[in-house]
Image (cartoon, rainbow, N blue to C red; front, side, top):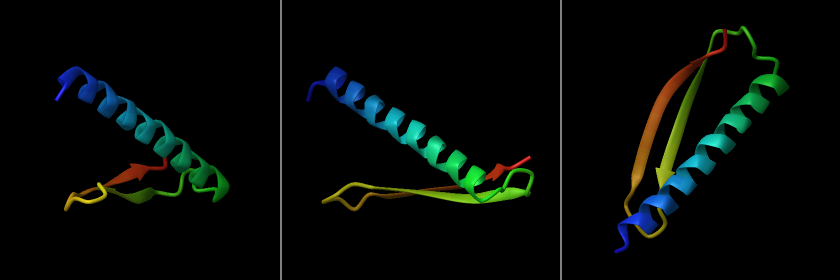
Length: 64
């Protein structure tokens, strides 16, 4: 396996996940008028086709 190629590909994917996730959350907060409404409980689930990967990250976003 080419480690550099793997790392670049993974970083590209994670950057896309981060950017598009932030945009989706910002749109949700804006569209539903949630600014200043406490905290938003979030869950992100990462899976990979053909594997048993099921990585869950849970947290809260303070809506200020």
